Structures are given as C-alpha cells and as structure tokens.
Image (cartoon, rainbow, N blue to C red; front, side, top):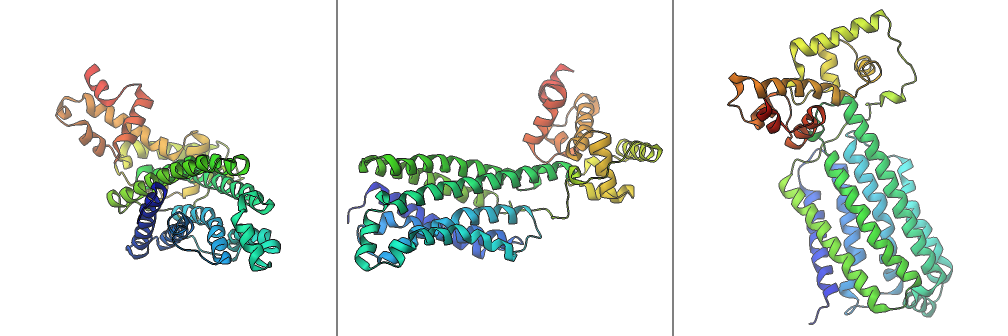
Length: 372
C-alpha cells in the first residue's frame, strides 16, 4: 500500500490526537471540564482531518462526507471554552453556551437547499466541485471569520486573566497563563497558514500548489500536537485556575480618596510588608495578605492599585527584589547561589526573578553581585 506524504502526516496527527484525547479523558485532575473540551476538540479534529488518509481507499456517503467537513466549525468554540474553563475554576456550562453551536448550524443551513435537501446526484456533484460553488466559497469566508472571531475572544480573555493575576497574586508562574498564552500564539500562527491556504482555495487553480499548502499545514499541525504532548509529559500538573469572584479593580466604580483613614491603612500595609516580610512566601495572594492585615481584599487592592499606582504583583515583587539585592551583597550570604537567593526571597521561577530584577536594577543578579 503506497502512502503519500500528506497521508503519512495525517496518520501521525490522527494517532497523536486520539492519544491526547484518551489521556485527557482518563487523567486524574480537578479541572475535568477543561480537559473534556480539549479532548472533544482532538476527537473532532481527528475526524475532520482523516479525509487525507481514507479518501483514496474509502468513499463515504455524501452526507457523511459533508458533515465530516462541517464539524470543523466546532473546533474554535471548543478551544475558546477550553481557555475559559482553564482560567476559571468555577466555570459552569450554561444555556448561553449553546450559542457556540451556531457556527455549525449556520454552516449546515448554507448547504441545506442545494445539498442536504437535494437528490443524490446533485449532492455528489456539489461535493466534487465544492470549491467552485457559491456555498463552498461562502463556507471558506465564514470559516475564516469564525476562527478570527474566536481568536480575538481568546485574546480578550487572556488579557483579562493577566490583569487579574497581576492584581491578586504575587507569583504568576504557578498559574497556567504562560501555557495558555503560548497556545494562543501557536493557534494564531496556524490560523495564518490556514488563511493563506483557504484564500488559495478561493482564487487558485493549481491543485498541486493546494496539496503542497495542505502538506505544509499538516506538518505545522504535527509540530503543534507534538508540543502539546511534550507539555503534558513535562508538566503533568500544569493546569490551575482562578475563581470568577476576582474582579478587576478598574471595574469597581467607587473611588477612594486619600483621607486620614486611607493614609493609616497605607501606613499599616507598608509597615507590615517591611516588618513581617510576608512576601517571602512564594504563594502569597491578595486574599492571604488581607487576612493577615484584617482588611478586605478590595480595600488592599484599592490601596495598591489606586493609591500606590501598582499591581499587587509588582508591589510584592519590589520587596522581593530589594531583599535579593541585600542578600547578593551581604558577606554572610555571599556563599548562597543566585538560585538559592531567588527561592529565599519568594520567587519560584528563574525567568520571573531575572526579569523583575533587571527591570528594577538594570542588570542581572550575577552582574549586580560582581559590581558590588
């Protein structure tokens, strides 16, 4: 049996997709909803792309073949729901989420008059000449629009997520923002390649060029799925999320003026940070700090964001960096490695520590130590 390069890469993608779907459905985790969305995405994607393997050996009924193509309109909504359910630990499916089925319903509606309600010969003719029909061209434009819409929606959710992390947590590295952001970047790259391939479908005439573009896209998908496999292997405890109770401080309409009470609270906060050094706890959150100070999370968030003009993340890390500066030049702690100092002052990520340190001092920790 001879396999084309496109068929071989498709087989590889099918294997990885099914493996990932099985892993996500069986792995023990508290984030089952997110895993379910991603596993269904992989299963649907496997069915959709399988045509490049079976088409030379099996002929499916026209309706099944068209439905196989149309189910791709579930992939973008599933990825969006995966992102949202990965961010929020209390995410629940609601009736409004049925709106995500609309792209598929609209796609079926587009093809209903001249395909689903047509006779067999008409169905076969439209399927064989799909790219040249008005329905086929409209489907390509609609599909690209839907993908772009959901990419924008993911970007907005991730932007809000980053802001929430900055305002409520002192260490972003323990959350899955980096993973989700990388996922978004890779999906954007895949969309760009898919965009050019689909545009060529609309205006191109050379089948060979179209097949080459398909092969390039499938190779990119192989890399994408392999990356996900490696992530799941090296970071099995990667997924963690936040609660929707967290609100951006900017979304609160009430504004506190700097009165005597506010000044007293600021003094209390700054004194507590200097004297008690709560920032040495790498898992310090706004809620933890509020409990220690016996102030509400909203009050502390307002003090830091509005009165001190900082995010909670930056506010805490400035103390960590200040402590690290002292430890780097202290003769008693001169034998400590930079990594030991990093953990001692409350960081648990080398990249976060180096980034924050250089942002404040203009040099790396090792350069700072040598200069002193």
